[in-house]
Structure formats: structure tokens, C-alpha cells
Amino acid sequence: DLDQQTIDIIKVTVPVLEKHGNEITKVFYQRMFENHPELKNIFNQTNQRKGDQSKALAGAVYAAAYHIDQLEKILPVVKQISQKHKSLNIRPEHYPIVGKYLLLAMKEVLGDKANADVLGAWERAYGVIASLFIETEKEMFKEMKDTVGGWTGFRDFKVIRRVKECDVITSFYLVPADNNPFPAHQAGQYITVQAEIEGEPLVHLRQYSLSCAPGAGHYRISVKREDAVNDLPAGIVSNYLHDKIKIGSTLPITAPSGDFILDQTNDSPLVLISGGVGLTPMMSMLGTVVKQQPERMVYFIHAAQSSNVHAMHSAVKEISHRYNQVSSYVIYGHPTYEDKLIKNHDKEGYIDDEWLTKILPTYDASFYFCGPAPFMRTVYQLLKGHQVDESNINYEFFGPASSITG
Ligand code: HEM
Image 1 (cartoon, rainbow, N blue to C red):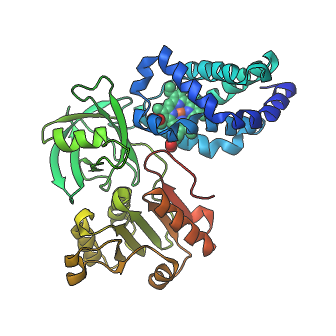
Image 2 (cartoon, rainbow, N blue to C red; image 1 turned 30 degrees about the vertical axis):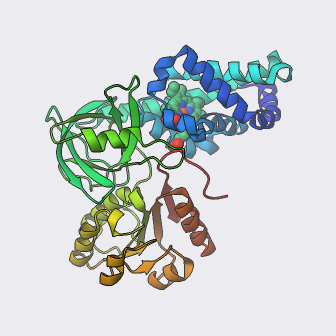
């Protein structure tokens, strides 16, 4: 436990660190990668270049430090981050490395503003926070090991089927290369793919939501090919998967992780809202609810630019025809001429309050949504406008988490 003096120092200095947050974070990653280049294989280098993700780790350390005398308050957040860490195979021995370079970066950036007392307090605080993460992740690793068919780290899966879902999204069906059992995921969870790409000095890790319901006899990921836009280069891993991964290829993956999962103990109406490739966890939830909760009303709302980039439309139509409990709706931002002729969609443009209010019988429902950040912000604000309780609002970011609530 930390003494009061340490706690006081931390509380007083959190704002100072936050003020210099970007600079400290930059120096932290720079120094850490210089001395531990192997960690470049773990951290998403594309996000590093964009600078988004780099703030998350250090930002979370400050946030945790702020609650250092009541860490139980941040346990839900710790658990969520630990799911990500588990999926990336982060190990206890990684923590002292991060701690060391975070401290060094503080010292370098703050200079005289950080004396030995301040640095000492932060070293102790980091130790306490790191222990909390390490313990949480140890539990998770143990649970994975104890699950029938479960595993830790990476395991080779082979591709048994590939399906082009639309112009930009392709599905890959995966089973263990060793043909041994593997555990069912929970609807909404993701896995990490390790891509070893010819000519690339680093391996690349990427998370993909599983897009099939559990118990299908395989896992399935559905990957959007990311083309180059403006100054952003094309997605290294998504293009590799689309171009090089065929039936019979193997992909090392980690076991399913994540706490964006369908709560099946709840039987209030379920509203699944997705934008673009954000539909992948929703497909898993949709397939699950019709099997497990046949009485539950389900509203499946999907927004895409047009039918050209609309994945799994016929699968969703089939489910909504077969199961009375399901109503499905399609919104196209820019429908094609043909879309307009044959009315492939229920709404043109973007999701809005008037339309959503018309199709939903009630806002007293469980909402799950996933899609691009601006889309999620819109949905979140809309639900808040109808006083939907936080406990009924569930969402998942693809890529670095950013704020949609502010
Ligand atoms: C992601 C916090 C330690 C590696 C994250 C995220 C947070 C975070 C908030 C973003 C989660 C998300 O986007 O869903 C922390 C805190 C740590 C810590 C508070 C220490 C107490 C570590 C360590 C490693 C690590 C020791 C490994 C060396 C990663 C990686 C990501 C990540 C690779 C994914 C993002 C990326 O690829 O850039 N962490 N982390 N973290 N963390 Fe940690």
C-alpha cells in the first residue's frame, strides 16, 4: 500500500503530467522502442504513426494514478483494457519495461519540475497500478488455460473457406490446424491475428471481431480491405489477408477476448446498430439471440454507403424472414442507381432521431453498436437524448478507443 505522502504527491502532479502528456508519451515510445525494438512487434505501428493509440496507454496510467487511493473504482476499465492485453499476449515481464521508460520520459520532459520525491512517488504508483493489471491478466490467462480447448498465446488456425461478402469485405472461416477442440467464443468477442508478411521486418497484430455465432464449428472473421486514403497508407494486414490468405493458409491467432458481449440474461428488446464493417460482432449477436432467446424482440439496423459495400445482406434478410422476432433495416448513405430502383434500403442518408423513433417501439431496450467513431457518436447522443440508461448502452471501437461521450 502507498503512504499518504506518496498519494498526495501523485494527486498534485497528475495535472502536470497530463499537461505534458503528449510530449511524455512521444519520448516514452521513442526510448522504449530504441531499447526494446522487439516490442514494435506488439504495438500497432500504424496507430503509432497516426499518434492516436499512443495516448491511450499513458493516459490510462494518469487516470489510474488519479484514483490511486480507490483503485476499485477503475476495476471495470482495468478489466476491459486487460481483455485487450490478453488478446495481445501481454505478459507480466512487459510491465517493468513500460514502467521504466515512462519514468525516464517523465524525467526527461519535466526536468526540474520533477524532483526525486516526485519520481519516487510515481515509481511506486506505477508499481501498484501494474500489479493490478498483472493480477487481472493472470486470472484471465488461467481461465483460458482451464477452458476445454482453450489456449494462451498464439495458435495456428487454418482457413477452410473464404467468402467475398461485398466489394471490400471478405470472410475467412478458421479451424485449428491441429484439429483439436477449441472453445466457443461469446457473441461480440474478437481475436488477434498475427500477420507475418514477406518482406516486412515486423510481425503485425490486428484484432478482428468474430462474425459468426458461437458453436458453428469454426471461427469466422470478416475483414474490410483498407485502401489508401489521402495521406494514410493502405492497411498492411487487411491487404495481406485479402491478397495472400487462401483456403489452406494458416493464421496464428489468440483465443477470443473482449467484454463487448451480448447479455443473454436480459430479455428486453435488443437493438443492434452497425455502420460498415462494424456489423461483424452484430452478426455474431444476431445468430446467438435467435438460437438462445427466441422470445426476445430484435431490431437489426445497418448503415452502409451502398449495396456495393454492404456485407451479409442476404444472410440478415434470411434470418429476419425465418425468425419472427427479428426486424431488420438498412440505411444507405449513397445508394447506387440500382439500389434506388429496386429499393434495397429502408432509408437514404444517415441514422437520425425521427427515423429511429419511428421504427423502435420503445427506447427501454438494450442497445449494442459498432462502427466508425462519428457514427457511434451520433448513435450515443441520440440514445442519451432519449434518457437511455448507461447500463443499456454497449459499444465497441474498432481501432484506438476515443471519446464518443464528450
Ligand atoms: C493498449 C493501458 C501496460 C501493450 C492499451 C490501452 C490502454 C492501455 C488504455 C488501449 C485499450 C484499447 O484501445 O482498447 C495500459 C496501462 C498499462 C499498460 C495502464 C500499465 C499499467 C502495457 C504493457 C504493454 C502494453 C506492459 C506491453 C509492453 C499494449 C498494446 C496495446 C495496448 C500493444 C494495443 C494498442 C497498440 O497496439 O498500440 N493499454 N497498458 N500495455 N497496450 Fe497497454
